[in-house]
Length: 169
Image 1 (cartoon, rainbow, N blue to C red):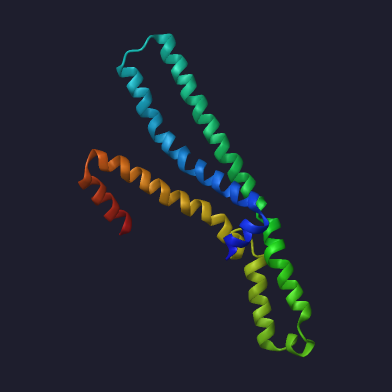
Image 2: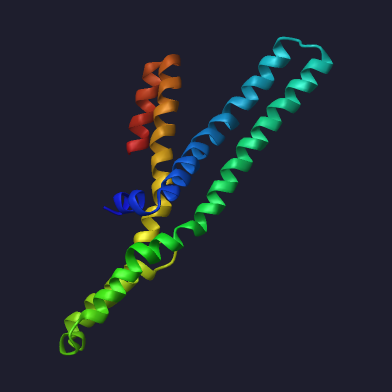
């Protein structure tokens, strides 16, 4: 329900979540492949100038990918404040204002309002905003697991089964 409301009222937030997820997947993957590419260039015995140019290009690509990851991660740290206020806090405050005074003063209503405020107004790691912060990381973990599983299964299926069973334990 949260993601549906975000898509409807704030589609740019969803686009930024997708971009952050993309860079969260690509950056560690490129970091793993980078040493292998350097070793491959050493084994191929490239000319010194070609080797240096290739190294500079590899690290330039890695720098761009890392800059993209940091940009979207830091941008997404604060971009959820407006959707949180628009989607959750305003309706909660309007609902609280519409309550009858005698119900509002009851202990049950005070507990419900306090729990609702904690889930909406909490810091970036809790409540509705915590879900929005955790979602790109969670999705990127599953995508990364699938990508690494594909690569490892090409090497040896038994290694993949052992690694997956160890990750579950």
